[in-house]
Image 1 (cartoon, rainbow, N blue to C red):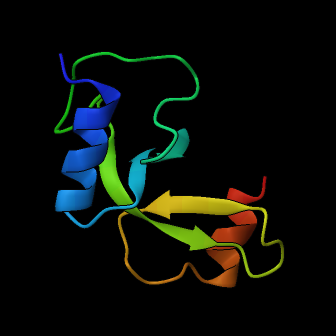
Image 2 (tube, helix red, strand yellow):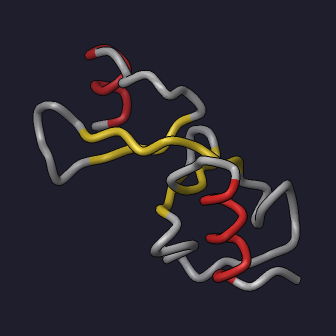
Length: 82
């Protein structure tokens, strides 16, 4: 099984900021799986995909990780903020 350091290195190599599981959760490469789950699966771990960090324009403490390099539009942010 890959270690967190190995996954962080792979994410950086692949140009990603962190991991995300669509509709569920996201984490950054410097704080992988803060939930405590760490299982084999997917290209990295936990069946998660690599993605890009985006900062919420209305709240700089809020962020998301998504497959897109483009900043989410306002409607998408509203869904993330729920």
